[in-house]
Structures are given as structure tokens and as C-alpha cells.
Length: 444
Image (cartoon, rainbow, N blue to C red; front, side, top):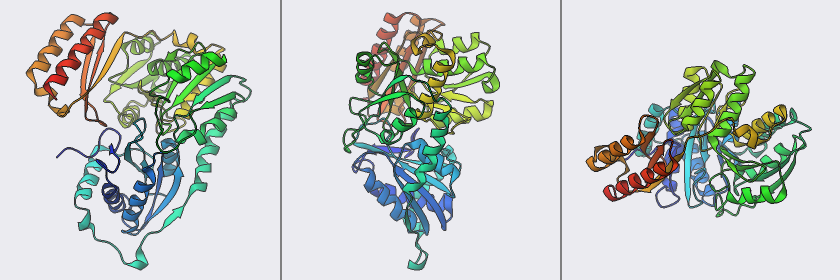
């Protein structure tokens, strides 16, 4: 039986692969394992139509074991993490599939510090989900209650507004793409508090259009608007606002690794990068590592997933980490990826240095890198397939010692992910296509 929890919670097609019965069982499992019955959890959601259904199911499950459920409504995932960490909650559950299409949804469980759970704890929850009826229930007098806690979100907003106000007077012109997600109700006001002029696009969620041809996964539209408006910078959030992709004034998308590099190099320059260490995933570009090391810093790599980034930061004593997908964790401000905080930090560097984002990005030249997502039925069988292994060996031989190949099963989709990196763009693209084709044929 495949593991329920992937790299970012439990995900699947809403009401088809991921059913409300699973959310109900997760509510019960969370109440049993993380709360111990009497106590409270906080639950939020993004703008997907299926969100209400899953929140209701979680609430039914948790209250059946005597746990109160504080519902905060539509919020960014980092807001839910913030509230779980500062409130009187034993845990939090975010209903979101992040950057995935509207038809998907997901369930992310956080502990009382607002942190994603360690794998062993997720394994315990999973076992409890499978035997949920064995957990029993409580009588009417001891049932938990649902609490409308939407007013608690002001605690998150006020915290981010304080960060923004320290940049007051920036005068920059910003275009913000809210991805028709949960960040649309929060990010514009926070960015405006910096003194910037903010134009917002894709901030009209209807339950069906989250991440659709917009946001961090598709910033092409934002790039056009930035160039047309003559804006200084563009920021694209994803559906739950935990990641950010930036666009420079010319309308060029700035790679997530370059955003990480901009933040890391600025901190190294003023000796403010904790441990002089940047933590990134195995997918991050070798050019980023080279740029950081040339400035006297160290790069630590972890498996893919922002919870592994945070674990790596804690082990290394690092204050900055992230993924090229746009997840950035800045320990002095947050314990999770927060696209709004990342935008504020990019603005801080631009203002402090007086340099454009395009100019700053030139400090982090990247090696050609190509990624492919191959939808397959047997994503976990690639390591044992001799044809795939021969293709990998042949590709590595062509790349030489300066190139990298990374093959991994997706933690959120039925897909095998292929990454090829090397000095020659044409060869990198060719090898990525070849490996993807072999995987598709062998694992269909």
C-alpha cells in the first residue's frame, strides 16, 4: 500500500482520490495523537471549491474525540503555520494543494510550533487513519466545538505589516500576481505598506481558477504586465502563497535559485548569514552553489521538500534556505516558506543596494538545467529498471564530471521527475528528453 503522506502532506484529486472520509479520519488521528482529546487545533484553507468540504470533515473528525476546531477560513499556508505556532493550539491542519490545479486538494498537518511533522509522526498518523474507528468517541457533553476564529488572522497580518513598514518609502512600482489563491486578500495591503505602488492581477478566486494560467507556476502573464506597465518588479505567489517567483523590470522571470542567491549574497556581504550557510535542495542549480562558495559561504543540500530544508537549517544552524521552486525560509521571520516575506526581503535588498533585480541576479550565473515530469503508473520502480539505469549511465558519461542527473519520484503526483544539469544547454535538453522518453516507455 503506497504511503499516504508525500513531501507536502496528503494530496489527490478532490472527492475522487482524496475523499472527505480521509479528512475525517485525519481529524480524528490528529486529535488522538497530537492533541490527546481535550484541546484545540486550528484549520485553514485556500480558495479551492473543495476546501469547505474537507474543513467540515476535519472538524467532524476532531470534535468527535473532544477536540475544539478553530476555523480561520481562507488564509495563506504560512499564516496558518504562524497561528499554529503562536496560538494555544496543539496542532494545525491546512487544506490546500498549494501550486496544484483546482481539482486537486491536500491536507497538511503542522505541530504546535507551526512546523511540518517529522516522517515518523506522519507514519503514526497514517496508521491511525487506517484504523480510525478503533479510536472510539466521546459522549455529547464532551464533544469538541467549532470556533469561528477568522479574527485571529489579524495576528499574522499585523506581524507582516511590521516587516513591511520597516521598508516604508520604497516608492517602487510592483505588479503582484495572486494566483487567484489565498494570498490575494493579504499580500496587496502588506506590500503597499512598504510605500510601493502595487497593481494586483489574478485576485478574483472562484473556486475553480486557482493557479490556472497564472501565479508562480505560470508567470508568463505577469512578465508581460510588468514590461507593459514599466514596473520595477513583479511578484507571483502560488495558490497558498508559500512560494514566490519574481520578474525583473524587463519582464524576465528570475529563477528561484537566483532569488535565493540574491538574499544569501547580500547577507554574506554584511556578515549576517547565520553559519555563513545556505540550505537548498538537491534540485538547486550548481551555479548558485558556486556563487555562494566564491563569497565564502557554504551550501548544504537536502532532499526535495521545504520541511527537509527547515530540518537542514536547524542541523546546520543556518538562517536561510529554500528551493528553486520559490519556497524560501528566512528563520528570523518564519518557520515556513512565505511568499509575502520573500517579496519583502527582495524589496529590502533592492532598496538597500540601489540595484535592480536584474542587476542583482547577474551575481548568480546559472548552469543550463532542464527538468521533466513524466506521468507514469509505476514511479517507484525506476531504480530497479535496467534500461533506465543504462540510459542514466550513458547520459552521465556525456555530461562529464561537471554535470548532474537527478531522478526522483514525485511526492505529490503520479510522476517521475527528471533533472539534468551541465555546461552545454543543447546537450542538457537532449539528455532530459531522452531520459524522460525512456522512463515513460518503461514505467507506463
